[in-house]
Image (cartoon, rainbow, N blue to C red; front, side):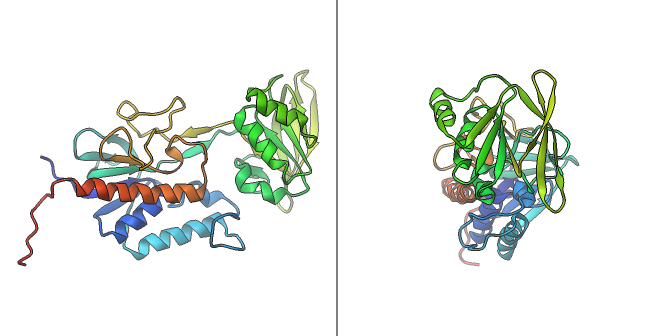
Length: 320
């Protein structure tokens, strides 16, 4: 039987991966975290995190991830910064192939590849991301108290989040490219009855405009008759869905839901023995930093249980 180089390899270095790495390193597992870029994931580009427990005044996304990384480093977490081209989950020893052709092996894997918000890909979106452009109403809604903002989208998520935003904003304009919503009827009824929500039908956002000092200030819109107009807002929530980061995952070996997210049980175990998943790559409803970190911890503890049921590579020699 092939002998594994590591007991555990963690794929991805966001909040879930770093927490799993912290627990594994502290638990003295032979563990390696593989990340193609900097540790921290999407949180690195989050301007401000105001709802992570323990930081009463809030903390920047960069600083939060820097602290998480330093915490894992304190226990000696091994990290490898390299792109992964493929995974093989078959057999008791799993393999991870890097871009340079090197193959790493482990008895267990935790997949923390995350997800990404679908974007409009329009001028101003990148420039004002985190400074008026957001993809998470739960995260950023409280920053827009008594302001006029807009939401792009017409599905369940967009309408749920628009309703949530009315707790803070003075006015929420829902911009939808079609003439009717795709959200469930009960959500539609709630939105239509909410006096803080207006709708712009058959309308697309062409450009996000603003300044370095103020952030987002206005949107350039195009309507169904090709006429253009300006909408003055201080924030834009783009809620047109999220996509799982599955490019390197062998989806033929993993059970996924209809949108491509990995299905796990409550202990983060996937359909493949020895393979676990945590964070935004999981099939679930809520995607927050705190539950990603919690899932990373649960996944690592499940790995310890899984490894504890495996035969050791070599018998212990307590006489040495």
